[in-house]
Image (cartoon, rainbow, N blue to C red; front, side):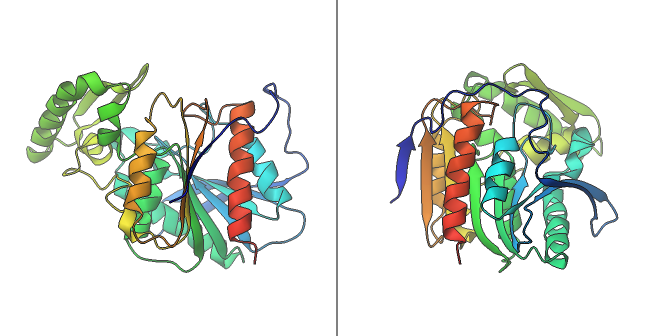
Length: 303
């Protein structure tokens, strides 16, 4: 068993704000066609010396590559310094989350991985943040890919529904079940695009979606494939789980349960970061995560 807790690895640093700190790194904006005709976008950061190693990051919630509370700049700098490229995929759901379906993540991830292979980035570390965790686990459950050498989950969740049981909305489970009953009824009546809403998944960020999409992302385990622990037994590569002890969205118990689900992984490691919240916020949190994640990936893919 490999579980440890670490503290802040860097001095307190200020948010560089609008300062452009990636100017020394080659940065590419990609347009990647998926098999069904949807064109995805992505950001690719490359080291100066060509590499076959790439860290592929799948975002959480609506799947947007940038925006929100995350600061991926330190991660990009650390990875590039260690000879990795970094690809952050912008999921199709980022453009139409209110009508998206969770299972489309398989098409999106497949398209990005095929693009990487065609461009000689064939040694892949596949990571997901928050709801990106269920995305990469569902992808893995659909078939193995030898290009993926390691996997990782950052501030991930069991599933949106199960994460709520000990998350900020834990006192509103009955209300959620009522919304799900309504959504199932609407879908059964052919009214899948009628909107439903729920206020308690994320503090101050209500979810308003079509009935079918709400079930797809936020439904119970009988409604959706959006789960890490449901698919954990499919993972057969070394896997890192990293989680903040002060996560206000996803209780640390989520990562403990994900760790326990990885029964087929040849190696698994769970790191708790003392005092870190749910997001890779600018400052010591994103800097510490960048160092811990890069150190582990570089060690596992050192050959």
